[in-house]
Length: 352
Ligand code: ATP
Ligand code: MG
Image (cartoon, rainbow, N blue to C red; front, side, top):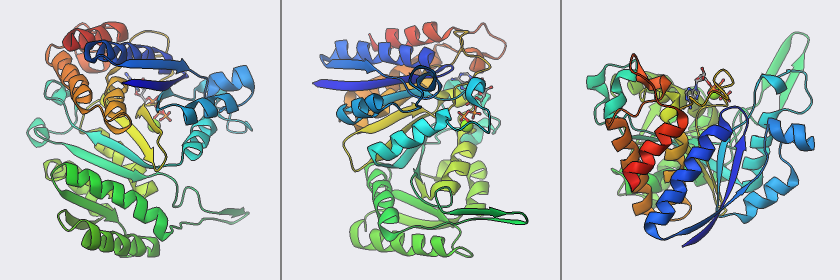
């Protein structure tokens, strides 16, 4: 197959991890006889420096015309003045909006070889395989805000359509996985959560009777994620709860450097990126963990290109590399760590 993949390296370790991930994609393409084109485009801080705009129109256009987008990370101390009018993160928000992305998928699957990197006891982690689906466009982050001398407010609102579309995506994933969906809300106090719960129940009843649906309050979920993570399959929730729960869930896997993500919508283009940021403290040193970005490429192949076998091939190769102790500094403990490049090479050797 032929595919056009837009690559947005961004800032900090972004260029280092995307370069390695692209070479992994090239090796998969060679092995399976596909032709992938990679166009590189500016976003974030580098785009502010070069174009005065964190999402130059040419970048957005290239992404809209591509089959999928692979992103590194944006931001860094150079652009972090809180009073700055233009900030790197605005580029990412504008890109999500421009591509109509509303569902953020974060799989959490602790790797056997890296269980010790997690603060959770290893016996609780064996077999954990969770997919968190976070709503990405609505809720309190995007509602009207007010501020005067002695008060402030943030409006939280959701429309039925916004809930329906993300919940349907989650049900579909649950159907493809183990057939179990947990919807997280705070329906005992929030009106938006009561609407969320009603819409989710209706869709479950009318369209996904084969999927087991449960509603869990967000405070209880925060606890269950750590006490019985093995019990969950797909978890769907609104924007802010998802933001918080996915950071919590990332600790199950040990290192930020292991977790991929996909952002999907109704449009044909998906956005794939590691969940970590630009890690300015280690940028330019060649020591960043590239596995999160490599695993994001597996999600890209699966969700945007429908190349399931190739996606499995990348995930198996990462498992193989980790089993062979191909650890970067964040995972190595006392052992001698590999460079970003060498870890990527270990994955490529597994693929070949
Ligand atoms: P953002 O606001 O962009 O999400 P952040 O403030 O959450 O960023 P990160 O950039 O994700 O921060 O970095 C958090 C810590 O994790 C840093 O110490 C960083 O070095 C480390 N880290 C992040 N990504 C990686 C990686 N791929 N490999 C190794 N260490 C990483
Ligand atoms: Mg962060």
